[in-house]
Image (cartoon, rainbow, N blue to C red; front, side):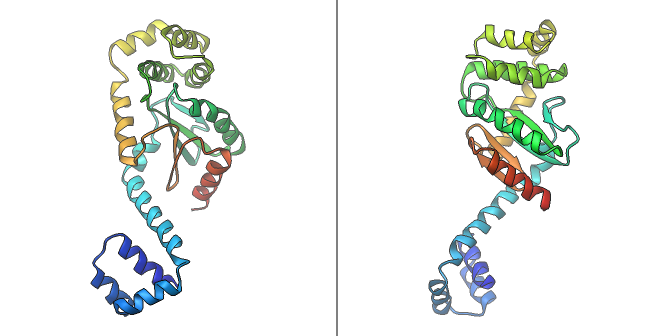
Length: 230
């Protein structure tokens, strides 16, 4: 069965047909017969192709993906397993996922959660993201992160209120933002998201998997367990 999967993957991936026949030792007719006789191998082959494609995307950028902006980390900052989350403070599903992340942190003390600010929904998203990075610089990231998601909207007043609630030096944060200290990080997050094929929030990367949407703690937890076992 494994050689059939190899042929299917080669064909789907666009490898030369002649190479596939040479590898299997079969001609086109017999290969077609074998695939028709074993159609259950096709989903397995497609899953393997997706896995290989995802690994090819992640591996060259893994160290960059898993290296956080200083302070923009939840959970265990020295954790052996890294969960990367792309998030936007205007995103309802990101807000819903906040409790999921806290559950995962409580259940997995070896997990480091790297938050990547990906403000793609509103102008307020970008303002909140800059303040979040300023909070990280001041060692108040988690406090601001929670306070911002608890706000009703991303008005300038609510962003400043979240900063004050988190214990930030707001004047210092404003100076850093005005100096453009966080623009490179935000641009880099866009670059990483585009290379991972991420077009919305929340999105998650753990191990060799990219997950999209509010998939819930069970799905992310399973991906964490797989990364731990790999």
